[in-house]
Image (cartoon, rainbow over all chains, first blue to last red; front, side):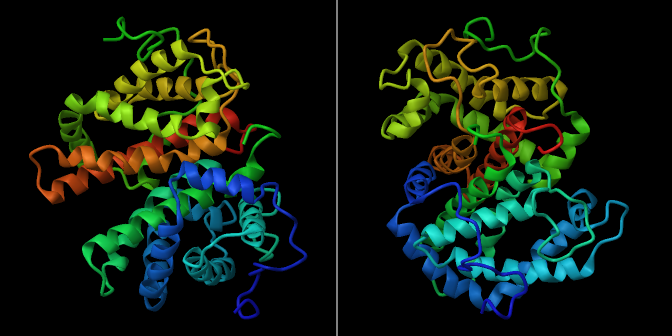
Length: 195
Length: 195
């Protein structure tokens, strides 16, 4: 899969080691109440979501596109979006849904979360895609996105063969994982010791 | 109410003006999909939650207490919690539930969110309560807490007279507001221009 998706470097040995390890991951998982049952629910969710990935991305891209202050981060800052950048990110975003639903998470996964964080921050934004876009995604929108990316998945989870209880379990496992991941992505934004 | 709760300075003129204004609030509200219907749902939620505030705080405090790496922020760093600090924060946390359920939010509310953020950061932690505790709450746990503080409220919302649909609306309004507020609280942690 990774060779088909431009800039998708999960598992690539050239990636820098994340400044957080599996012990910190465990502590963060405890803080978001994430456990083995959530891992199971996420794997189930992956099967329900797989055939709907393009629809999910359509919904998320429509939401971003409908808000000038959000689509801004894909533009040159003067209203012109970089369409190739939008497309390349979209392919990785689809794969991100699969990866989110493929726990357990380990150090290799942490290293890629760190890379994702760097790609939102001025430290590495635009570089992977040679994009012509503003050089930094403000942290406030990264954190705020926990809501739409978590909440909008629920309707798609309903489209499987699962009971309402299982849909609920999958939704919460997803919500926990999104919160966990956004938390990890913000690390490069903070002064040493503050994150 | 404010005179009865130690350190509760919402509306106090001596508070510094937040570095974000109502226009930024509107943009963040759009990012978390927060609108007038959420305001209505939150006001309804406030009535359902009011008689349950102590139980909610018991649940949250038990959760923190069960995790050494979370209760840590109320300790001197060597295992001794500051009980008075825990009590004073608890009273404000109860009032925070009421304030969350009392939109619309305005500049005065934003100023207090900024103050809440400062009180988590080394810039102002411990000062309000003259606490004997570590001097900084790591941002990663502030962000991670979006999950437990959002998800655990749902059972309490069920304890009213509302339909499942309305419970759902109240839950989502609460989740949006928590995400919005945590986003605002993190501002003091970031280098200029990065938040």
